[in-house]
Each structure stands twice: as C-alpha cells, then as structure tokens.
Image (cartoon, rainbow, N blue to C red; front, top):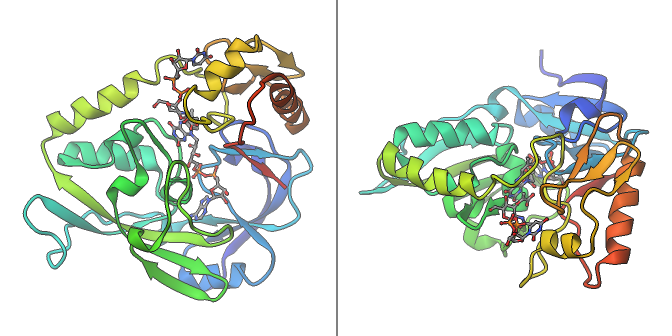
Length: 283
Ligand code: FAD
Ligand code: EPU
C-alpha cells in the first residue's frame, strides 16, 4: 500500500485548545505520500498547540506526519560528531517534542532543554522556532529537510533568517525531518537546566489553551500589558482570559473559535500598543 491514509475528522481533537471543525486529514508516512498530499491545497498540522481552528473546519487537506516521519534516530552520526559536539540521525517532523526532550535528558545531551514544556511536534516547533528565555529550537539544529511544492530541500540553519518565534521558513513549506546538534553533558546537568525553564512556567494555566496569544512586543511582555488593561478573568462564551496569566486564553469547555476571536479583538482594542498574534487562526 503506497497511498496516504485519508479520513474526514474533527480537528478539535488534534489541538490543545480543543476547538475546530472537520477536515480531510491526510496521514502521510513517506516522502511519496507527502508529495501526493501536497498536490492540492493543503495545510500542515503539527501538535496543534498554537492553533485556533474555525468551528466550520477548513476546506483544504490537512496533512499530519506519521510513521517514519514521526520517528527519531538519536544515534550519533560518526562523520559529523566530534568531541562534545554530537549530531544525531534524522528526527521526524511529526515527533512529539516533550518525549524527545525527556529522551535527550536521559542521554545527558544538551542544547534543547530550554524547550521543555512546549507541547509541539518537532516540525511545528522548528517552523515557529519555539522557545523560552532558556533556549529555542534553533539552538539544537544541524540540518533541516524541508518539502516544498518544488521538491525537497536540505538546509543548514545558516541558510535561514531565523529569530524570536520565527524560522524564516516560508508558509506551506513542510519540515519533514531534522538532524539535531547537541552538546554531550550529563543527565543531572541537563535536568538542572530543564528545571529552571520549567520553573518559569509555574504561573501558566493548566487548562486547554493554545499557549500565549500574542508575541512579546519587546520591553514589557504582552501578558503584563493585557493584565494592566484589567482584562484578566474576562469571559466570552466558553473562553476566558486566564486569571493566572493574561496572555493565555483558556477553554472552559464548549468554547467556540468565535469566542476566542472576540477576546482577541477586545485585547487589541484595550491594549494601547500594537500586538502581533502568536497563534495561527485557521482558515
Ligand atoms: P501547530 O500548532 O500544529 O501549528 C502551528 C504552525 O506550525 C502552523 O502554521 C502549522 O502549519 C505549522 N507547522 C506544524 N507542523 C509543521 C511542519 N512539520 N512543517 C512546517 N510547518 C509546520 N511556544 C513557545 O515558543 N514557547 C513556549 O514556552 C510555549 N509554551 C506553550 C505552552 C502551552 C501549554 C501551549 C499549549 C503552547 C505553548 N507554546 C509555546 C506554543 C506552541 O507550542 C508553539 O507555537 C509550537 O511551535 C507549535 O507547534 P505545533 O507542532 O503544535 O504546531
Ligand atoms: N506578567 C504580569 N501579568 C500577567 C502575566 C505576566 O504582570 O498576567 C508579568 C510577570 O509577572 C513577569 C512578566 O510579565 O514579570 C513576564 O511574564 P512570564 O515570566 O510569564 O513570561 P512571558 O514573557 O509572559 C514567555 C513566553 C512563554 C514562555 C515563558 C517562560 C512569549 C510570548 N511568551 O512568557 O511562551 O513559556 O516566557 O519562558 O514569548 C508561548 O510562546 O506560547 C509561551 C507560552
């Protein structure tokens, strides 16, 4: 069997917010299946941890990386590894980031410990250059393999203009696999750094959410600005601006995409500084 598995499914179950209607989901396990899936209008779905999807769903195909594209080979590449600097085999874009970060800790391999607690897939986290002030995805990348409508590209991070929450990879290009660039350390030392990054999350809500709504505009954080505008605890339908941290909108149960959009509009009206959305709104 060579074709991708295709199923019409509610997207809510693939998101951390738990909102979103149906679409045709293409589970692709090989590069050939991916090329076929990309032959008509498509979107790529990772861990769904940064998405607000409409209750009507989306008309495009929704691609999900599975099988070998969601597996990881952490064996050091002997030709590329030297001394304390280690380069792994291929890690699929569909690999869940939290399990990867835990595995690296047990192996005593550093560089990605700052991304602990980010409920993404590797591909989505690379696409956004997800991170915290303790580190980001591009700290641990050696090679990226990217599927484009014109074929596969193999890039080095130096080929991209990446920065805060931005990889420079064009929308619609799909991170299929990466090789990680890691630092040999000890499990204890990696754990100590992970604990620091984890502690910085203590004030974040534990409910269904797509993470921070807005990027920090530089200087004062977006959370503080929304808080100072007096918006903590504001509720529209089933969506609430979290009392714990004002840059998080949570689903109290039964929230619609419209409820979340209404809160985002309200925040933009009330906060004096222009804020750039971190979430992605589908469609
Ligand atoms: P999705 O939400 O599925 O998609 C987001 C975007 O990435 C979409 O444009 C999608 O098309 C694209 N994408 C997905 N997979 C691929 C791929 N393989 N190739 C190309 N593009 C792709 N973010 C931070 O940066 N720091 C944090 O500390 C942080 N904390 C969070 C805490 C919580 C509780 C939650 C829910 C979210 C948090 N986030 C954080 C936000 C989120 O995890 C990141 O934005 C992450 O990068 C999203 O990755 P994903 O795989 O879930 O992508
Ligand atoms: N603050 C308030 N009120 C609030 C929220 C925050 O006054 O409601 C204040 C805090 O007291 C603190 C400052 O704002 O002095 C910064 O807050 P915090 O330490 O929570 O960090 P943040 O800048 O809000 C960033 C990332 C998070 C990441 C944390 C921890 C962005 C937009 N957010 O949050 O990333 O987890 O640091 O490293 O960059 C995400 O991107 O989705 C995300 C969750």
